[in-house]
Image (cartoon, rainbow, N blue to C red; front, side, top):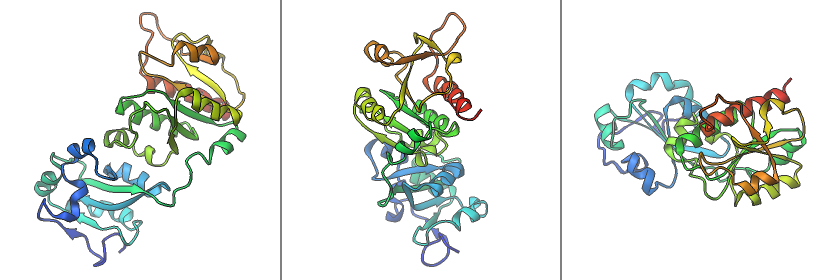
Length: 276
């Protein structure tokens, strides 16, 4: 069977200090200090990793009880990807905390991955949607934004130079692995990103509680770039004055909605307009 290393069998790990499982050691601490690659947790995220063209699994660490249920996925692994197996006590000592899913994968960026911006021209020609995140610093919001963008058919996510890392382990988990399959790239400021998109024919939609247009009035049109700011600072008055701004109808009393939730509402509307 493929995916079990040279011997064709899972590789048993009894020593939590075994150097072969170094990327998995003290997972939470390494989230902050770096490990050179990324950690994918659970079978749902593993499925996305196996589909990814931009990231490649380098090894797996799993509990023995999970092996049978992973057989089809393991058969899809490249032959040079080892599968390490550790009992629960050893597994938890390696990770530094109880890992209830019992499935971890270490992955790195694929050297032959294509340019993440290569699909933007195609998206523009097809009247598609891209998402632009400006200043998002919360990993939960970042992960949820990728999940929403993916499920509603956005072509890519563009990040300004202030956004948090979407490859942070928690962001990957919240995104259910879509960070690994949806193209994204980090560029400069919101204005610099817009200049690149404007050349391709995108219309900017700036999301704000004070937007001048109601989402319900949005109709089919050119390819759209949905700009999202932080929950507080937002996109800034100057940016909102220069571009078409959208608001989502809400009950009185509050004028703020979680950025990922609000993005989902707008992306759903854009999806409906593209798929009548």
